[in-house]
Amino acid sequence: MSSRPLRDGAPSIPPTTGTPEPDPKASLESKAAPLPPAPSTANDLDYSNFFWGSGKDPFDILGPFDDWFDEARPAGYYLFGQPMSSAPRSRVDVVEQLHKHRLEGLINLASYNYLGLSYRPEVIDAACDAIRKYGTGSSGSPILSGTTDLHDKLARTIADFKHKEECLLFPSGYSANLGVIGGLMRSGDLVVTDQFAHASIVDGIILSKAQVRYFRHNNAADLERKLKDFPGRKLVIIEGVYSMDGDLANLPEIVEVAKSNGARIMIDEAHSAFLFGPNGRGVAEHFGLDDEIDIHLGTFSKSLGGQGGYVAGSRKLIRYLKGFGRSHVFSCALAPGVVGGLIKACQIARDEPELRDRLWENTAYLQALLRERKVDIGDSQSQVIPIMIRDDDRVFKVAEDMIRGGVYLNPVRYPAVGKHRSRLRISVTSTHSKSELLEAADIIARVLDRHGLLCR
Ligand SMILES: Cc1ncc(COP(=O)(O)O)c(C=O)c1O
Image: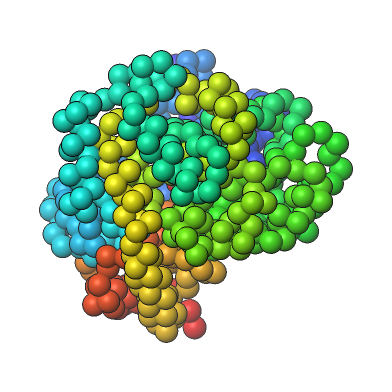
């Protein structure tokens, strides 16, 4: 049996940000069409060409993918998943995967850990104490034997922090979106979300079998068009800070349109909880719209540098999701060490607002340095700062040169963003020093200049 990948023009997997999934009917027709000529170079192809394949065995696609990946890997795919051999501090050591070189002391602009809490000694002590008392795993689903008093304390801490009645924990932010959207929305319902919505939102909608409509990024008029003729149950989902562009949801207009069209509203504050708003609750608090939002979702992997996801809301909502959020019910509860560390990290985030002050100071400083140097950082309004490359091949070369120059940054390309929207993504933290940010900005500008990618 043999199989060939389908080339451009064939149906492709949806970007993990929210372009609609391929029309299944169109896909069937395309699968029957003759295959295009074989490609000339590995760079002519990307992951989209290996979603569908000919042949009767699902494994038929593995060989062609393997052959292509062997060829394409040195061109830049090797940059994905390179192991770090240090904590995600402002400087890191990385084991480069092409020649297995150990690169030491790179300025780290790639890790979330926005408040630098994952390696704070008090957080590590709390995690170790929890492991000593409860062991390394929870050994059960949260609804069976997996819940400990620590889990209850973390859920209560988040509910209080978010000023909501209750909170439910999930093994990850990804699974929180799957559990909440899949738990609440049904076939025949409508979910309307931003075209740049994260993969976990897209996958949650697919799982729910609800109808999906994407509105143009942050465009309330388009949201209105997508909502207004639908007579059934409706949910609008937005992100607080968009994960690849770093801009904020246009919340005041979106809330107005959603409410006037009878839709419920859910916000994913993965990159904004513990950072935005007078008390750090997120972008909803920043806009004074906390109480207008029905479902507040977030992760522990970004601002707190931990792991896990949560949803906060009314007592009735959480009770329902406890029964119907399948990624909560049918997956082991978070590990006690993670939970112990997170409780301490939450306390620090709440009690040390100066961490946020430092983050915003660092963000403003780096954004100004990059803009002065004519780096294209799109419309970022946050600690998430894209360096727009807009060239899917070139982004690998640029990332490689950044790392060689001393700055650790990851390439981001399709399917994490749309085709031809490639970029590098910066995460600023409160622990970067001004001198590290200045050095990084100079290296970034030098590399981009060499590639002719600075704005004119
Ligand atoms: C907006 C958004 N939601 C959810 C997630 C998933 O969170 P986690 O990585 O904690 O599973 C991410 C992660 O990148 C995200 O950016």
